[in-house]
Image 1 (cartoon, one colour):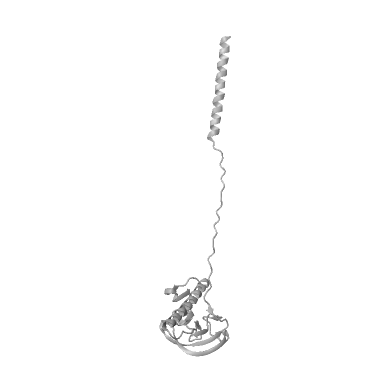
Image 2: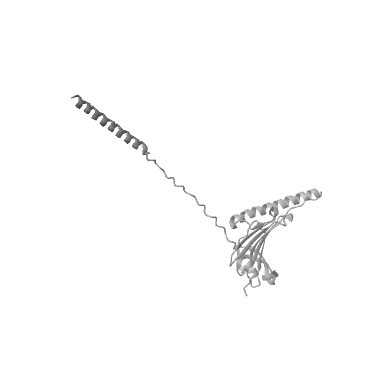
Length: 222
């Protein structure tokens, strides 16, 4: 009897130990497996700013470069004279120069000139403005002050014009010290257009703008 009781107690203890070990193992396995981590993918959207498209140099004041000049292109032809100009390899050619009233005048210019090649094609269009001022009589210091004001006013206008041109045609290809001149160029295999803005005569209150078709000038049609 005692032997059987002892044997039963031992069996119960072994069974209990097995259950405890099994629970411990399950707990360890459960702890070993990490809980799933919630990963949120944030999509990064890149904003691509499109390149600014600039205008091409075609002409000015309603007058087209590279076309045969016609009186109907302007409001009025004020004068017409022959003129010599340089073609390819500095060859001297005979064209014409016209003083005109354009169809689309600009209040920042007073005088307009059109230059044509030997075949009558427009290779240059020029506008100029002359500030008028009354230089104070008497002391030289007064005259100097007036001239400085005149030059500053003129150059500030040229710089203002240059900013406008850069907004239309892109950054200037080159420029002189302190805004003495600005040069723009658009060239390809079939075209070579240039635009120059000059302030080098601002001491006298004069500034000019020149649109040029280099291809038309260098290669006139027969």
